[in-house]
Image (cartoon, rainbow, N blue to C red; front, side, top):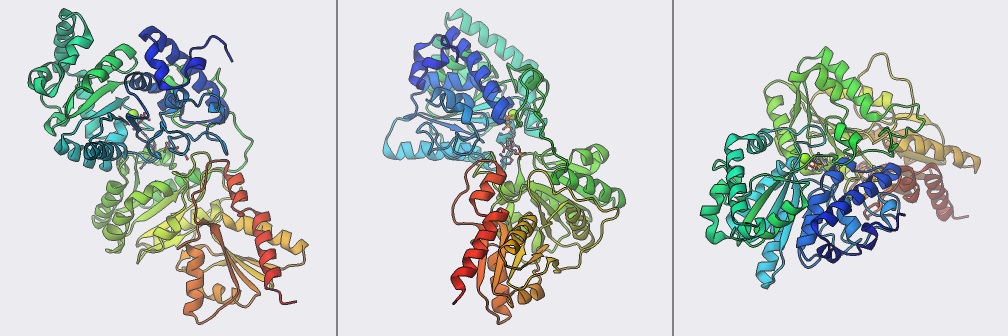
Length: 630
Ligand SMILES: Cc1ncc(C[n+]2csc(CCOP(=O)(O)OP(=O)(O)O)c2C)c(N)n1
Ligand SMILES: CC(=O)[C@@H](O)[C@H](O)COP(=O)(O)O
Ligand SMILES: [Mg+2]
């Protein structure tokens, strides 16, 4: 540690008020170094956090948190916030098991307002806080920081609509860097570009500059920026076409988001207004670290990397990721069937769709951070005779359960939901684990659900879904696949038919997806202990293989293993099927118990959950021992 760092003497945001703008700029530089150093070891959301350093410092220099409320959208940009709110000492544990969360987390600090991680919720939370303040007659100032891509999400639009009506004091800092994870998309993005570039804006900015200079001090001039002078001041501040203004939200001209003085003074001024204000701040994603500026997409969320080169420290890994196998298989399918359209909600690369987008640009749609819209649009495409494949992470598809059920399944449309990041995902933690998709897909009538257990099965699953038609969900995990050879030709899997991977009569382990190799490992361990377990790759989470379930009931113990929640999960579905057949059996449902799963390496988390080979074997052995009357 460098003894002379300002960062080391900042123990709370109150300390920032003692620093002048030059010192705050030095602090910004130190924070950037700390972020890069720490994330080079832990991985993390580097580019977004680097881009937001000055915004966060300015906000904390002006606000009195935790009394005032600073609400982050997604929270992936909040590392500087962690560093100035007393978490410097733990910062290098970021995203590790038991360490600091990569997102704001109320249990971690009183400065973290809500458990963020999912985009576009900050404005709703902020308005709720403002309303609570108004109802209690309190004086808290409420500020939300939201990115340009998150602002385009439906939830944020709904909140803007409400904020414009509510007219209660609230500041939205729009961090506009023209980037989502990839380049941002959509008409709003274009509108913001117009705001940044238009002659009108430049003229108004110049007039504003002149007005401020002639009045001697930026702060003094902006101090008049109250609601009572809104009509006159806004002539200087905004082009009249600005949509926020039309919604009743006062909007500043774009401000340089790396100029602490401008940020601090403008924020202090807009906090004086008696209604909602949007502060339009322009930043550079990755600012201060050249590799991240050059490649903000790569540094949006990155694994541990070499600081000098910016290259990811590669782990030796022979198997491709499930994601990339899916992406390549979809390209193959699309070459054979021109009706196929691929849809992402702002995760082109994350869902493996980049090769598809490159080869079929007209048949690729990035809907932006708008899962509901993406799934709703898929239904229109299907009605229009296309075959949409919607690739969305399990955790984000939670946003679109209604559209999945009502817009797609009710009409029995040919839509494939490629559900990536199913099960635990690792370091992003509880907001990002894909814990629920086996519940929310199975519960929907007409829906068929496949849980491939390796990459070859994934290729067949995609082919099956496209061949059979109807609403179809395929769920597969984050990270490296199993390393099995890929098929020359994909084939259609027989509906509702499982495959037996190993025979045994003492217990039957009915496993789903990624749990199949673990169940096989467990069976080997059990065999060493004299217990012969049958292992069945169930393949289909819906419809279930009724025959294999009945067969399992003939052993001493029927075991289900899934990578999602037990409550309402597919294991309980198996027990329901057993009951429907009028059968009963000693049973054990393994999966995620009724609690949120923390962050950490996926293998460690699965081990904690008893979902590794040893854990499964131990549960089976224990249960057999306890039910053995002798
Ligand atoms: C509901 C939801 N969908 C998708 C994501 C994945 N995601 C996280 S950050 C991000 C891009 C955010 O862009 P922006 O809000 O502009 O912030 P920036 O990273 O540019 O600072 C996306 C798509 C998410 N966290 N939540
Ligand atoms: C902040 C966010 O939601 C995404 O950046 C997410 O962290 C991506 O996860 P993957 O690393 O699994 O693509
Ligand atoms: Mg952005």
